[in-house]
Length: 408
Image (tube, rainbow, N blue to C red):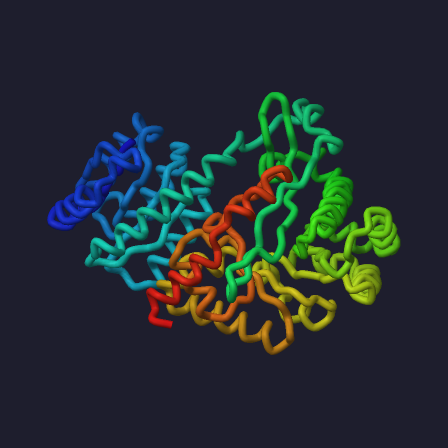
């Protein structure tokens, strides 16, 4: 595999190339480092070899084809490796370019600012390689034809579980149940593989119900084995507006002997208040039964504060877009910090979503988020891998390492 470095400054190219060679990357499968002093030449090469490239390191300010255009072009090639941006531009510009790259579906590591120091480069490279590997393990065809959906009917849906970590103790406190489909043709599929199809959208309520039933059953099994974990399940606005939802969940919990206080229902901010009166009715009845309610993807909708005021949420999940890059973006850091402070003042549990790098982990922990989830800890796991993963989880030892490194 290869690393490609693109910068019009030949001195910077030479320095970064030497730093990379001194890292001893063969152990990570990197055997070639290629450098280009113009983006057009790099793009021409990537068009033929992008499947062999593990990471692209790219400057933003370049003559001819600038970094923003280069990002758009490598995304159009179907490049699936990692991307590191480094620049002398102000942090707001670098952060915006990073967001653009993620919007194009690229796997983007921490932004680097010139001059690049070897330790920062090493950490960023390690992070983006891990992120890229985790992304590759779940990467599937982007979309399916309507005719192929017969193979991924609702009865084939199952929850996979992504761990939620207590940022104070680094212990596993619960899992989010994420819908997955088993297809003989395509393997494991995510909602992102199917969301462009009308047929999938028509069955979202049924999918949400199926995942909820299985997750409550798994919650009961964990509790019966002495594991006090919580489980979070995404529900659609339509399902939350169903006045029979509370009775259905209570009946399921009774049938499986699942602890209702360990169940959390998540609704995305964009879907909150689609049917206000019915949703408010159900939400309050759920909370009376000690079932937690979480507002998911917080900050991506248009009425964030109104949702916090009017629905009885007791957990707030901060969207990945506010976590990514905040460690090196002062504006992003302040927004994240203010959101966490607001949630704490309201007595809500906070969960940082999409934590993918060590830098992001340290940031959300430092700013006071209660919990976190993301590829930095683990991708979503099938049910038979959950308990083995928790046995192997070395969270408390990581915590000791953080304390030693910081002199706590």
